[in-house]
Length: 70
Image (cartoon, rainbow, N blue to C red; front, top):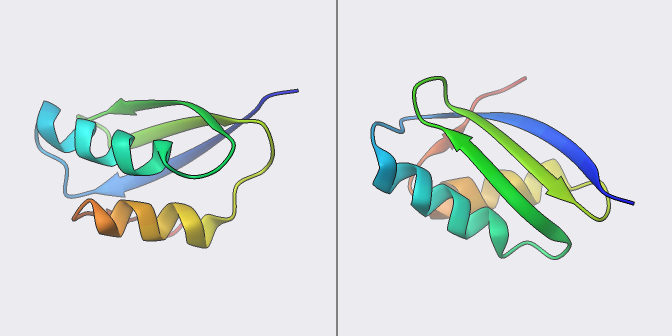
């Protein structure tokens, strides 16, 4: 059963930014899809199990951006 989690990423300004973030998060085990809205920084991740926030943070930082603290 799929689960959806939402995160906010800061520093994205264009489609390339969204693609970079999406690609990095997609590499996390269990991730099925990633939806990024550049204008708001909203990132919605659908996965097979709850994701570890530290893994998401590491992926976002690897892409060159920051995960906003919830």
